[in-house]
Length: 288
Image (cartoon, rainbow, N blue to C red; front, side, top):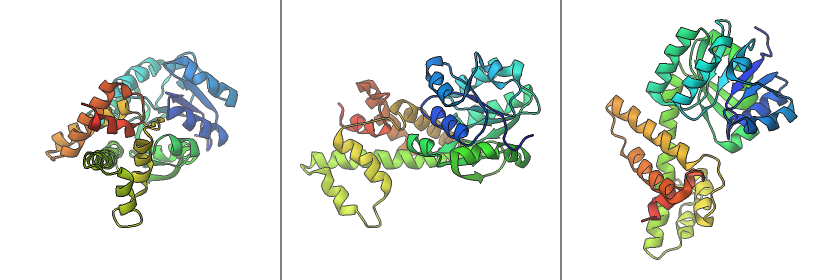
């Protein structure tokens, strides 16, 4: 396979579009397809080839990337791509679809032929734009070797974490932390307001000490400003919170924070914030 593989990229939404831009900047040939075609068209101005359907996108490609919002969407898209797939290809599955979803896609890859690399990413819109995602790659080393030029273009580092499926499990662990920090920030701010305090006093109190962390300032500032430009949506965070809860339940682990975060996120979505950034979880804490 060439050192600069031809890439078929399926899913050019919030994360996929900037990832494609970085692949193009790195000099890779990229064919793109998206369920909503209008979201893919701007990438043609950057040099991407627009495909009419998934099979057209993947035919003759060296590497296929899926970056979609759920396991069913990935399964349907790869099934539609099946006429163009081959055993010579590597399929990078970058979507966060949970343990059971990933296992089903591993089995589907076995049926359809391409070598499967489970490679969800850490990072939201900013790192996707900057090419500084962290890649949690799992699968056979020779398949990851083929995928590495793609990972180098979109990420700052690649972790090889074991057999296919390990990347998804690690992503869920990381997401449990993200959900916990976001929910804790929202609840602390809400408690401060309930006690007739400015939440900024809390931020000032912990700043620079062992309780401080950058994520508090990033998500906390959105809550303070009551402005939620989307880096990662409430809707997708709710999906991930439920995947974390499912994984914990299957593993026999108590993960109450994910369940609480899911409740807050669901209330925020019901209040009309589903497409806002996950920092709008705060609306789920304060909304009756």
